[in-house]
Image 1 (cartoon, rainbow, N blue to C red):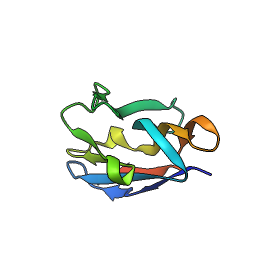
Image 2 (tube, one colour):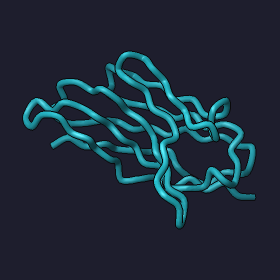
Image 3 (cartoon, rainbow, N blue to C red):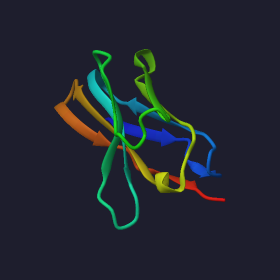
Length: 120
């Protein structure tokens, strides 16, 4: 059974930094895309950043220039470095992966979510 395990959330002051990690585990043949979404209270989940297996990186306009997504393909892990954090970045951050499982074919997985709170 494939799963995503996230870590790295927490409380940070405005202007601070946090780094999120997400590792994909299980019987994985290929990972096509890994990324981060976030959901603030009473708002819809939105894409923050994603990285394709071919190296294409995409960012939401609200985080471009402040957040950096990177991946370690050998470890099936994606990272989100968040700098210059703002109160409006406060949300639950979810890892997402689109992959091919050796046992059960194409899957879209979600992590359990990690809280990021930006507050003084």
